[in-house]
Image (cartoon, rainbow over all chains, first blue to last red; front, side):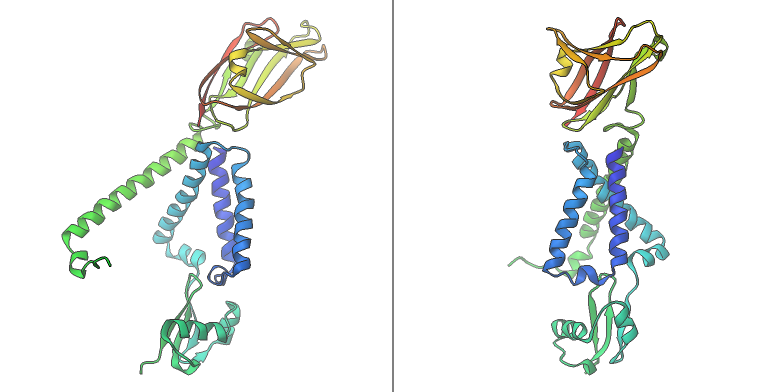
Length: 148
Length: 170
């Protein structure tokens, strides 16, 4: 019983934590972020296992985490309002070539990030070539160029 | 370089049949995951409400509480209770069959016994108590070192032994 409860608590705690940390956290993963994730996983592992090194406990914990993910995906599919809260909604940061500074500040995106995405996805060089830049739900930046 | 499936094939009935079968298997496995987690929550795959058990009757003044399902190399508890009437004296002796002890590693006995006496068939733990009547409890914390079916006898003072049956999952 305890294994499942621990798994569920850890899953929803991490979900909340990463949602509060903001959508750019995972998309902008740096070397240090990777180390941070390793430390988090090591810390969480201690809390979840709690001295029970049996195969049954390991399988149950994995099933709890995967099961929670499936459950949440079904809930999000059924209740779009919940999905909006859990996943967020895409945010326009460049509108018809104009940067939307307030939105950019809220999601911690700067001009360099947008130009970076524009260069790598469409080979664009300047801001005036970008019609729309959108920060997607997974934190990546989509670029829609002006039609030539 | 592998051949890229053509759009026509991706939209074919054959591809759709494959997808339907795959979705069916997926849905079935989700149900199995949900059932397994429900079983675990109830205590069928480790300690939990349905796993909790008692050997002996509290009305007889002596009983043992334990979990029927425990896990290999995971800490588990057995609690031995005595309802003292006052005439048993100051000592409690808990006798545990040796074949049971051999399959596990005792990590802690709380309270610690005053002394331990070995015999070929069993191990006897002696505890000092007050003479006053009331409920006394000794907790054995252990870790199974084998998996499978465990059976052991627990006895207290002159009471007849009660059998503890546990299933140790890998």
